[in-house]
Image 1 (cartoon, rainbow, N blue to C red):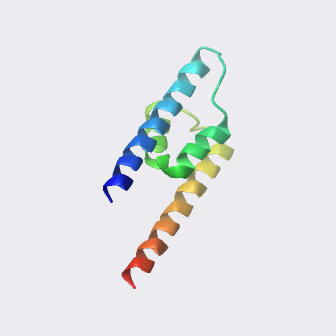
Image 2: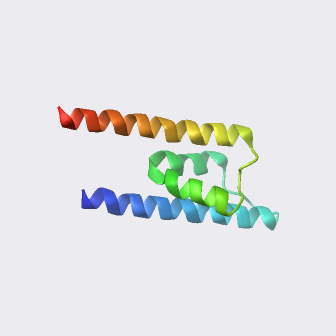
Length: 90
């Protein structure tokens, strides 16, 4: 359980920093992080870091296709977590 907690701290921090770096690059009109990479980081556990950075940095909040994909990942994670917990209970 401790390893999982450390993993989630690391991946959410990495996701948060990556979103922030992408926003910084966008402001400077420099090379950006791909949306696929941002969504992948969220998909492997960085959803909370992604949500916080999206609203803190005002990044990708107006891009409907990205928001839809991001929240689809978040909902899928919640559903998988729910069923995973149910499996351990029985």
